[in-house]
Image (cartoon, rainbow, N blue to C red; front, side, top):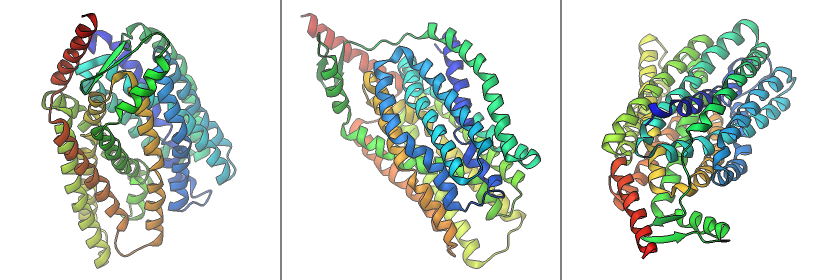
Length: 443
């Protein structure tokens, strides 16, 4: 199914690259910016959180719009891309920290659009193949995450961070015509149409003339079952690890493990590349073994790795051990395993949410989830403040254990409620429910 609609898949994938290059561009470049405009870890976290604060109301609104204007989601994704590219030009001209915050606001507006539009679109268009579609899409997003630290830090070290911002902006403008042409052809591959009625837990929600708005409100409320609420809370806590890996990894290796700026960016990109490879594998594994089973495996291994990371870093700090190559290699391995185990759960989770939520309101629920994750970005400030305090024990790394353990417990709760099914079994049960409903309606 993916090969037959390759234009649609590749269009979303390329936009996903852009969606990961530009929203993380400013936080990552702070490793260079702070030499010109003085920034501590707390201010760095505030810069990253500014975009998230902007996203809190917008992702909910855009998710709702995505369900209503599902045929126009590709065009809205293109608008988001244009906005995120434009914030690099503001960075280029920014004389102060305050103007950098303005750039973060503009970038946040653009970043609000892609995920509540694109992820539900993949789930709705590809059915039981959605696990693979999400895993491939995550690989392309990871490519963007890899490109940003390597290219941005390397170029900024050579030519300056303002010139690098301008260069990224020019690159984005040059890519837009190609992306818009792909979008035109991708529209022809769209097939999903919302059904006129939906089955949820043996209850039938039917659409009648003039009741569309009431139906949508009722269905959105009905979507918030116990398992779905648990999934949302679990993903919110999981997002803490994602943000730490994407915002602080290079800074941690430079400041805590005495690696050069370029070396830190290479380490960060390599770690994220391994995470992307893990995400690709997880799509194929979870298609056969089931989304929830794969997510639980991801959280168990992530929790174990987080504990090992705390023990390792804590021992070094408490004993005042001098850094050497051996310890650096161990740190890189632990961070790499953390990324691998964490990213293994990303594609299965996106598919799992689509398995538990009516597809007709999936964009709305995804928007709510993205908004909650944006609220949770306050943990970046907490993480930065703990590092700035300079405690003898790395309490900031304990946060990673919390961000792994709480989701694991919640996913185990979800398992007790819905059991373990493969994507094929989920789609089969969904089809049977629709057929039963339509049969009773015809009678």
